[in-house]
Length: 336
Image 1 (tube, rainbow, N blue to C red):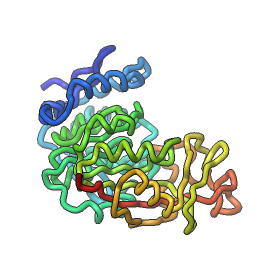
Image 2: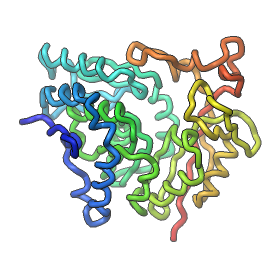
Image 3: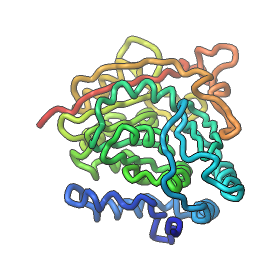
């Protein structure tokens, strides 16, 4: 059985699970989505990524692998599923795709220690999900797909991830080459593409995105448009401590990041959500970011939380702003 077909100048690698648009052709404007798919994939098709495409193409094709989770890791296969050459190819792929921001993962017994312990965030979100059997789910800002595979264990009809990052895209392709999860798909889209799926998703999960957007209300309105009436939004954001209805707007950087705009309090995040049209919004989690959750590892060797905080005052970022928390809000789109 051949590996995935590689992209040329106008095409992307084909998901080994097929194209979900064929399943939902009567509900979506497939032509419009395919046009945006091509326009949004310019970075993915750059020559820089050719070694990654070649690596994925050369990987062994296996079937009937166990895919699930164990001790917080997304697990694909076991060591016995690969010969020594295949195991070395997987090791090379893991190294080539560094840094791994989201995880952890375990591929054929090889553990990937990601910068973020995404399993800790998953443990906060999972009790809020309700039944997902045969539901249609979006993970907007999905990263490399860690949460998508966790969601897939709950039996949805479709888990569609959207993320414009080229590295995340190839990390997902690398895992999906082996996992071949039929209901899990990733588009190289940003949140601005969410309206391509009008009233479509039963659940919209959006974690770690809103503070990167200069227009948080506009972003939430895009999420509103893609959520079906009486569907659910679960929104997770970086935040600052405080009881007031306000957000920090850093002058240049927040925790060394340039692409951070509004960092809200929990109450402010609720206001954002309700201003965008959602109802029944509630805060379900407020957690300070710790060195256990975000850290430098052998698979994410660059700066991390310890470099972003003031070493003499861990209640402040290196710039002197309040240290980051994470807040989770759940809300509903009203019935029409």
